[in-house]
Image 1: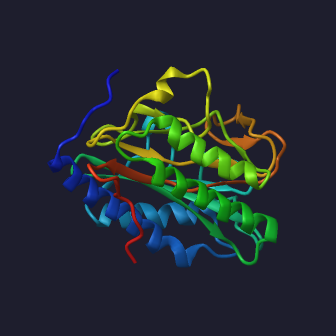
Image 2: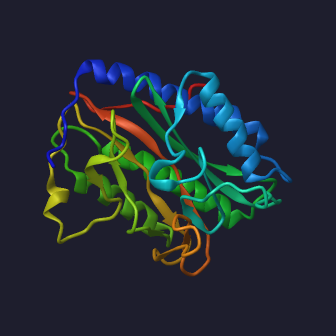
Length: 256
């Protein structure tokens, strides 16, 4: 499928959706505490999203049962909130939010610390954030999708970390997942990665950075939860951006 080139009206609506998604993460921040269940976090986020006139996009999406994703420690992505998963001192958790506001999708995620994580966990989260921002910096007209991937993978490898290959960023606007397919590592055999970026493209950049191997395992029980194969830690951050004539715009920028 061709990559859609969106208009200014779409950018205006994506700003609003992205802004709300960011506000959901700001809202949940003080609740990420020792002893809180991921189900509690889901309920708080769900209520906030609905109260602000939006829809939680993950809920019932291809059978996903909750309104947000909560991925703790060695969970890479798509963790399902449950009442039995209680946050404990030293945990790291990714909370992934996607809202639908007036038909437009705002998609973002952040890492949170529970209590006092170990230094290796903190460093992993910091490097994952840096990887995302370097990928965003490379996302500009005349650069390619490959430039984004190289920026991310090069930085992760400096610290001995790996980049997950089984999941990627994606185009987004009025549809949750569409072209382009944003790999966060340099796939040398992929001609698709040589796609030149143009103003009007809208997509997510969401690198998943692992402490150990990049390999993942998807739960056979729920069909969603992806964990690191070696059970070492994983961290992820995500922004939704739009390519502009001079660079890009981050729709899900923190709006404290």
